[in-house]
Length: 411
Image 1 (cartoon, one colour):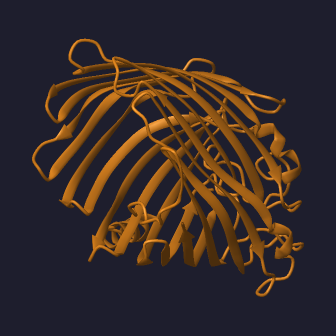
Image 2: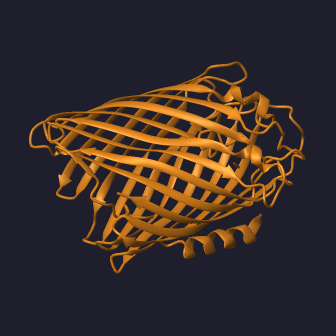
Image 3: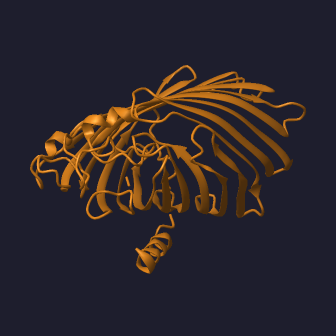
């Protein structure tokens, strides 16, 4: 995934343009079963992708592709036991019209999120959930090159304990994550050739891992709309094959979040991140975010996050991430939504004896229009730019332009 004043000016321009993230689209009446309501839907999206990264020559071509995505939304509301499930199956078909050999990039994808909440309004509430994603957009291991698919599953359990009058909330939790990678290209996309798992799709199994995360979060609402927040998480990353280094880590932050006025909201958190296994990361982490509520139908957020994550492969153990972001949304006339986001990430990859960096610039701008409560159309543009010593292709630079149209039918 992965120059100078020019790059800085470009990032600032992106931030100024991307002012506006889409609220949930309208939906039809659905199928009602008692208190449950099922909304089936289908989305059809023609795309242009300038960087497919799958051809016999090993180059990075562009092509036209189509997403055909049937799915459903199931809601069972209840204060005692509430159940929600949102899921879809996505067939991604490359056409081969602009570049030969891209048909081999066609694949299936899924996105499913299940949530079960017990005694939601009580002094002790239980939340159980599971999230499954299969995609070609890997985010957990940014040192891994393009041309791979990720299958990620995370199960979660959380208790919400609210003693006294509910102003204090204590949330112990546990998450178990599993991610496995597979190639849809046998071509190395690194200029140096397939010498490491980061470059050779045949070796991407070195990135397969399991995560155990134990967390303890707290919240004290000392004002009606402002709270003191504590977030702690102890993680154990275990790789399922040789070639990567296991890691135990701790993240802990303390801060405040809430409304300053009827329009301005703020989140400030600061703490410490520690790699206990190899000491590749030991530094301050945190977040600073300012949000402005334009109205009931629009908002704007500007923020900065500093954190770190483990990563696989034979070269690196972890990476630090300093991220500046801007995103927002606005609903015009009750039917027309403009949404956008921009971000700049500085990634610093760390290993036993090597450190490399990478800059990621992301930009996303889109429009959605509700023709009927059950018919929505839209479109958008996405830009991904990566540069740095950790980006191997095209002289340490990578560009990706994507444009798409969308039609959604939801009953």
